[in-house]
Length: 302
Picture 1 (cartoon, helix red, strand yellow):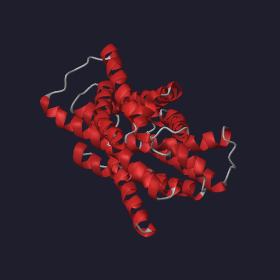
Picture 2 (cartoon, helix red, strand yellow; picture 1 turned 90 degrees about the horizontal axis):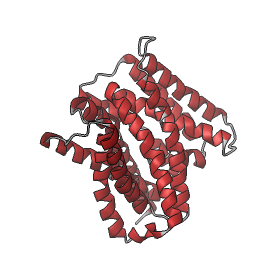
Picture 3 (cartoon, rainbow, N blue to C red; picture 1 turned 90 degrees about the vertical axis):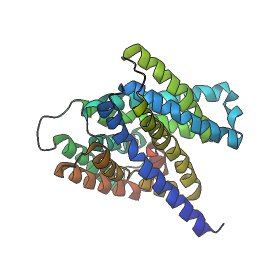
Picture 4 (cartoon, one colour; picture 1 turned 120 degrees about the vertical axis):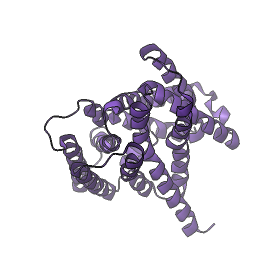
């Protein structure tokens, strides 16, 4: 296959990942607000449903027995905790936030990735990266304000929970460097992690058996938000540069706007549109900094 065709496949995979990734913030709001599924239960069901996809992928690639190493299993536990614990907080906050706000606020992950790079990885402080961080901070403040000085305290959870994602992404990169392929890693996260979240839901929530009308959404949500996008992301990583893949992937809030309109009938406010503009300007500046470490920490393995 020619290099040009290979890159085109990678670009389309990255775009497919971006479009599908725009579904999860809106799906979290739809599931908790419209279908009234308890938030932790919704996350557990969607995550566990995606395990069927990763089981088939792992078996097809013949990588199931990579999970036999105790050392790698310990890393898988840490990775899973670093992703699903903040997701539980985000899904809880989704009960009282719009799908658009969830998509915009959780992009704070890019800010935290830059800060971790500066503080812990001793990366060079570049003017373009400072500009990018300030633009994304401005985007969050504009959306938080949204025409009024009073704001929903749950929005702060959406802003700060993604900090933990950064450490989850770093753990995933370390595990893959140690020889663990992505398919069994995501199988562990979705299977063991999903079951753990469901058990936790039984302890803290009024656990409900979803109605028959909810199951179609749950199956689609699990597959399209937590399954297929991760496979597309890996295809993109193998075909095109990481910084390019990350830049495309981080553009998903634009599609969240569209999905929120059709699923939740949300019409973006002028402040949300302005926040989206500042967000994209910030992402542009951050990608100009050409830091592979930043791209890895912000990469959506979550």
